[in-house]
Amino acid sequence: MKSLKYIWLTAIVLLSAGFASCDKDDEYFDDKYQGRKIVIEKVFLEDVESSVPDREVTFARLGQMIRLEGHGFMGMKKVYINGYETYFNRAYVSDNSMLVTLNTKTPITNADENVRNTIRLVKDRTETVYEFEVRAAFPTITSVSNTLPGAGQKVTVYGSSLHETYLVTLPGGIEVTDNIENDPDGEWYSFVMPSGVSQAGCITSDGANGKAQSPDFFNNRNCMILDFDGNGVHGFWGSSNKDENDNIKPGVSMIYDTDLVDDPLGTGYGKVCQLIPQRLLNEGGISSAKPRATEVWTTGNKHETEDWTRMTPFIPATTPLTEVALQFEVYVPNPWSLTGQIVITLVNNINFAG
Image 1 (tube, rainbow, N blue to C red):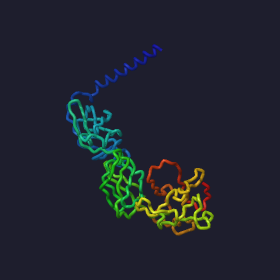
Image 2 (cartoon, one colour):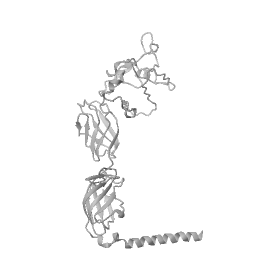
Image 3 (cartoon, helix red, strand yellow):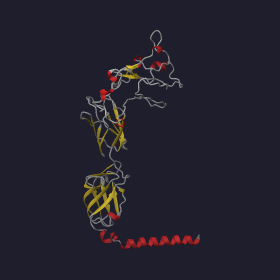
Image 4 (tube, rainbow, N blue to C red):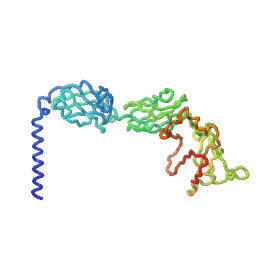
């Protein structure tokens, strides 16, 4: 064991000596470069997957590799991007160019204003600062809190890299620039729905990291199945569910037209279906053993609104199912701490016991 220990120590000493010898003979470390002026003339984005793998740019995003072009790069000791010390491999440094990858930990919006959007190159006796826009990763929209809002309602858009959103463009080219709230971490922004938005489509937003776009589901009522206000037909049945005076018997889960109420918050939704209607709440709520708390159906009687071929002008019949989504709104005015599930069936006459 003792001899083995000395063998390892000998190897380490020899390896360290090898590095020292390499450093001593490497021209990169020559003192003559430490005072030579550093000049950045252009910045190029290095992207092997692009049709133009080396193209001049005015900004770059975190995680991307850039090439600095100019002169005086030999002997470079430190690189700071937005004030963040950034690793670089001196093997990719010549006097006229060098490669640097923007570290994903580089601060963006929380970078000090004095160093934000700058590249600082440092040698022993000289340095330079080059103004260059640094952005986070491409902004994306993952969900929207309210896709069928009325005028005056708040809409929150969730995603990533949505920092400093300053412009929201709604279907029809209607722009929102006032009262946009931003999350400092870029995970959401919100705005108030303006009046006059009659078209359906996507939400497009402009922010510090560029443009983001949602799917075409915003304000889209083209393929409405049921909204309780004339789009689609609300179906209900079951004579055994009513007494001789046509009153709904206690505990019946079927939602009838008499269970619908006007939007209690006055936010412009019209008629709405309360998930647990007031008549059941008046009866003491829903038994934990009940398989179906409540149920809402369309007629299932071949009404014209249930012929879904009417939707083919908007969703071609050849569209793969993986590219089709069912959109619905559930409004929760207070924090919801309970559990449960919503089941959606697209099959008529299904034997669904719960």
